[in-house]
Length: 323
Image (cartoon, rainbow, N blue to C red):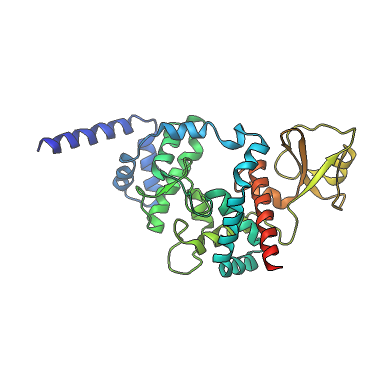
């Protein structure tokens, strides 16, 4: 009896702490009303969510902001990850070929995304998604609006796709599965590829492969078109501030500023200019539309370049095996 009383007191204390968080009651009510869910069920889920300081710490030091390109590249362009990409390709060859054919997204790009995101499923995240989203929604003010929406979508997702709200694990930002989809992306772009009645991106690799391709297709991937082209600068060139990820300059404009590429591109082709820091020099790249599409997955030019270069390494080795 004493243990029961202590447990009830702990639960009561936890609930009071949760209720003291600004807007949590309003969140529970709105999530319930907007999505046809029972308020008590939403509240029960949130009562069991925990604030994790380690999640806040991780959000404050993302690799894309703390590392230079040569350091960031070294994380992903390793022989082990390239070779495991080949194994993943070989193991899921039939699915990859069918999905690539129907979507127009190259196999190597799909494989590289899963390779960069989770090392082909080897590291899908160790945080409970509910803890990550709760922490960032109610204890990380500068990103609270975004993560509050994702928390709502996660609760809807668990109900709709019949996955556990309390046991599902993912990244410190609440991304899930082989392709690390945020809840809103999961709801919008996930595909039930094997037609088993569930869009399972957590454990079902065919669903995950098709969903990554569907994400790219939905964001405008252009079949058989290039991604980036290595550029160089002359002795005199105009140093530009950091450019938008979306192509906003023509090739002709950049050439007038002293930038050029060996690839023959139309003068009016729209590109972005990407500058990446190697150990002792800067690299310049013309980013095409498909490069921009990769940044819709993660809004970082270093991320997009890591995906592209990993994809090329895997593709080259795959072709060498065929030859």
